[in-house]
Amino acid sequence: MTVVIGTSGWQYRDWRGRFYPPTLAQRLWLEHHAEHFATVESNNAFYRLPERQTFERWRERTPPDYRWAVKASRFLTHLKRLREPAEPVARLMDRVAGLGDRLDAVLLQLPPTLRCDVDLLNECLGQFPAGTRVAVEPRHESWWTDEVRGLLERYGAALCWADRAEQPITPLWRTAEWGYLRLHTGRDGWDYRPETLHAWAQRLGETYGADDVLVYFNNDPGGAATRDAVTFAGAVRAAGARTRGCRRRTRPAARPGRPRRRRGRPRSRVRGRRGPRRRPRRADRRPAPARPSRPGCRPAASRCSRPARRARTR
Image 1 (cartoon, one colour):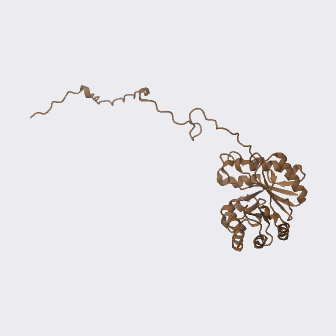
Image 2: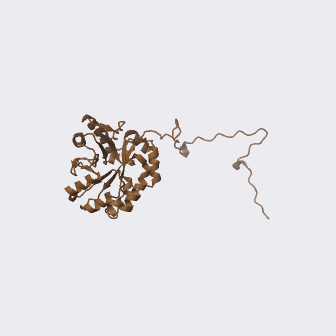
Image 3: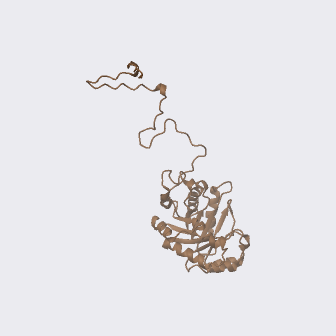
């Protein structure tokens, strides 16, 4: 089994100083993410589907072995609620074609209020081109039926396993020759406990054997996803499976608390110089030195030494 580990997205401001170096420009965050992980789940496409040129630029900026999963637009899943899927699916596949062979899977996350409708899901899955790997994440308990499981198996679509508060919230069905796992949040906070991640590594090994599994951490606040991905990679290797991603260890989280103030005058942007000094008060200023008079010139008389002019009288 090969487990490909990544995060759900990469553009999070609170990752600066925790995962991204403080001085790294935001336009270089994708390259930095690709240095540490082998895949990413583009969940910003769920809120606003990027243009094809954007996907093409992302492909050019990442290594050849960097893989992408794209979350389908909410226009298809939440607004249309899987109705009339032909046009939204065609537009989605036309845009993500900019990734070329880097596209690994498409995620359909259904709204939690959408009850089971096998006909709608059947029509939607039928719109995807042959060979497209689609993962489906239902979030209403009415979907857990044998009919839905058989439909996913017929299309080769993977049921997205999901974890919330360190508990599985979906059945652990295997419906395709590959797997998809999303981890949303820990039990006592955003971070997962190591024993929970080791348990998930054991489940994947027992279910998928030698097949590939995509794993994405969606607990992005505070950089928890990057830390848990590193821990999970170690758990997968300890279980005897191969892993791709987590090529370097990420930076530890910053300690909570107020930042320390710098003492002394603030440094200017020029190295080796400090900021401007405080201008002294008038009483503390030194008197300006008298200018030397030029030779041959008579010094000007002060106002008080000049003779008073007589007032003109008629």
